[in-house]
Amino acid sequence: MNAVLPIYEETYPVFSFLLDPFKRLSIPAAFGILGDAAGRDAARRGWGFEELVRRNQAWVLIRYKMLINRQPLWGENITLRTWPKLMEGVVAYRDFQILDSRRNIQMAGSTAWTLIDLASRRPVRLIGKEYETGDLASFHAISDKPAKIGWHENLTKVKELAAEFGHLDMNNHVNNSRYIEWIINEIPVDLLLNGKLREVEVNFISEVKHLDELLVLVPEYSQNRNIFHGFIKNKADNRQVFAARFTFE
Image (cartoon, rainbow, N blue to C red; front, side):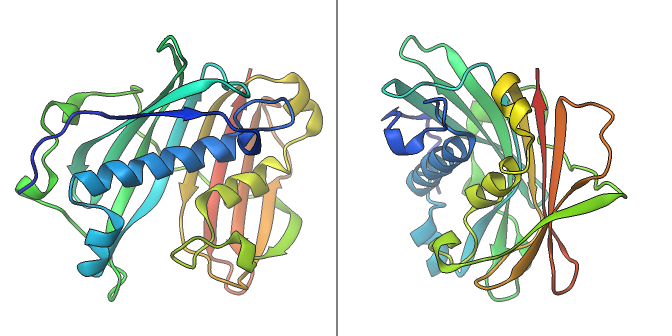
């Protein structure tokens, strides 16, 4: 039985290797360091990588919604905060915040995860005292849950790529932040230069392994130039892999 633990916090410098061209914490880097913090919090609660490997299980990130007030700058010290909330069926929700040195919220969001059995590849559920989060169950960083992104009917292929060795994580799957990076590369440069990114929503739909060939797709037409959608499919079987929506101001 796990004791109910408080919100996990750690201070993290914005190193130069985490930056975008504007010397800000990049979006892929933000996803990466928050995922890392989530892993450490899960470990102290008894649901970490090593513990789950012994049970032949693993967490899989399925959806993410991030609201952005400001992207922290090079050299700032930021505080990462993350905590688990409710598990509804086989979906577990975890929220996060990135604070500046004065503890003002710069980024905040919510994630949805599922726990899978590595042999059957089917979801399993932590129940009862295995997943006890106390008051954190109703403490929300943002008001919305991360939602499913609808696929557009008229999509245009803009790139083909392969999942190479350098794209893989320690589970031998493509690292989550790589998908985000691939879609950001297709956003019009003038929007990246002149727009203010306010929301990022992503769906991780199916796993990608070494040497899988992928298609990066974008809608043929967009009714709102400040909202950019991007999608990734597996070339071999046309399977949906990833969807993203970036909202600019």
